[in-house]
Amino acid sequence: MAYRDFREFLDSLRSQGELIKIDRPVQMELEVGKALRKSASVNGPALHLNSTGTPFPLVGGVYNTRKKALIAFQSTEEQVFDRILQGLARRIAPVVIENAPVHENVLTGDSIDLTRLPVPRYSPDDGGPYITPGLVVSQDPETGIPDVGHYRFEVIDKNTLSYMAQPNHRFGKHIAKARNRGDKTFRAALVIGVDPILAYTGPIQVPDDTNDFELAGGLRGEPIELVKCVSIDLQVPARAEFVIEFEIDFTKEVLEGPLGEYTGYYTPASKKPIARVLAITHRNDAVFQCLLTGVPPTENHILKQLPFEASFYAMMKKQFPTLEKVAVPSSGGVSFYIVMSMRPRYAGEARAALLAAMGTNLRPKTVIVVDPDIDVQNSTQVEWAVSFRTQPARDVIIVDRLPAGPLDPSIDDSIPLDARTGSSMGIDATFPFGSIIKKAIDVPDAGTACGPALAEKGHEFFEVADVPGWQTYDFPELDRRSPTPE
Image (cartoon, rainbow, N blue to C red; front, side):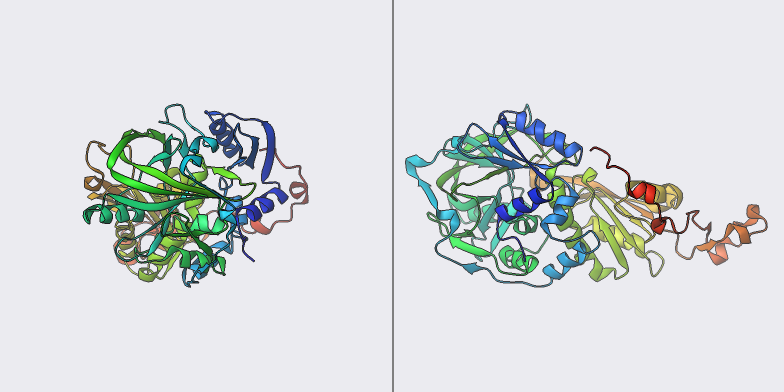
């Protein structure tokens, strides 16, 4: 059975030693960021901070390792991909309830005070405190179809926020449609502290006509419970810890940023519209959430990784049926770098897959395709394939003037977001099509193995010099060793 809410997920993390309680005071100004960064650097536990200087405890790091992601999906590394793909293939409509836990406390008017929430400033040059784990629920102003996605929000004062919404993301598209219609405002909600499957649904790459609540229901195997907001015409998760209902005012702007972003670099400050808070609702004994972004790997990268990998795989598999595995590594900010494994059926298919990947909405800068014997999650194996199965002049493709990826610090930031272009590199690290794998022991004269016959029968490789049976080797001394401190 899926977790009903954020609290049940925290209980599961705690029971498995993946969440620790900290009762000493931890400052919102930079100290939270230090604690989260240090824990993430050693694949450490999530943190439950009880003394925040505010009425609410703060939890962070719940998505900072692949292990916690598997706990969120209640799955194993071997099974999680199939579970996500099965969930993507079905839709379960949400149900609407009236007496929702998130409405146990309702703050409006003078009761609204964002400074009472434990919102950290993570990095020294951040423009202010940032709500980074929040899910924005917004509706397409033309179709009414809801979207759920992760966006950053800076706290400006006690009832004002500002935000960043990329123009190629659905929230940004909703805002653009409202502006183009001549609307002066746009309403949406920021949701904090949800069941983990809903959080992992946010990054999934789907068409704009997808109802994300139906998608989340499919991934959970049961419907999401929703409730109508108290001040705006929008439905939000009923068991969330907090919901901040807001109205964007296109006529008023404020300086938003900088923020240490998922690329590992600061994004500079720029003028953005304000988001005026209309209401805050929260559960009794509510728990606020924080999420660190910055130099990979951080929580932001792990949260995106499995959804990006699964949705990208599902899309590419339709065109390239021998595709076997996909990795979207943290080192590439979880979008700028993709590794695929496949068994090409004909000459040039690996290159075709590279070009198709370059043209996707992930906007990768580097795409590598390898044979199925390479573990796409193992960077050393991928680099080995690039080193010994490629010739750069033959196997590297560079395509220029593609849409640039979001927040890429190597792109001129003076160019408007929707006008930025960049280049992408594809590396075909599969064996050249038609290659022959030979046993070295069967070749009497290794020096003549790659002679004039190459043009007729394909390139010859000697077989990989692995040690058969090592995976299942009985090694009791190693199995009984004490765990190495992380």
